[in-house]
Length: 150
Image 1: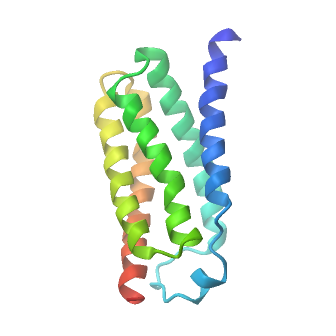
Image 2 (image 1 turned 120 degrees about the vertical axis):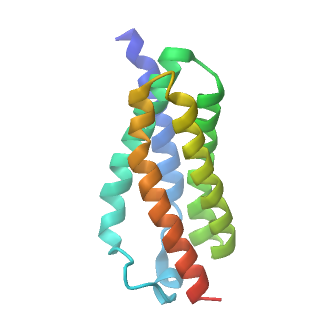
């Protein structure tokens, strides 16, 4: 059981970020924006992010167990902070452009984690692939919303 205590820490950190992100719901402002036709329905985001946050926590934990604090874990921490900031910029501050900058940095942090964790834990790196795919889609959506609402 003792070896799994750190897993609960990683699960707790990702849950905290999910709670922070959830404190800034889309609301009326976002609903009133012009969005591309390929925008998913709102109900999709909860299940997708729940699974991704689980993968994020496990990936960070696997790297921690294998290597401890290193470059991969620094990328992991950076992506976690950037992840939480996106909702703040987009929905809390209604700053689509700042959210676009944030999600671009988030994408780089996720890619950095995948590249630096590959030698440490291939499973950790692979757990981030769906996250990178989703954030790539979200970045395209963010850009489309930005362009449609300039």
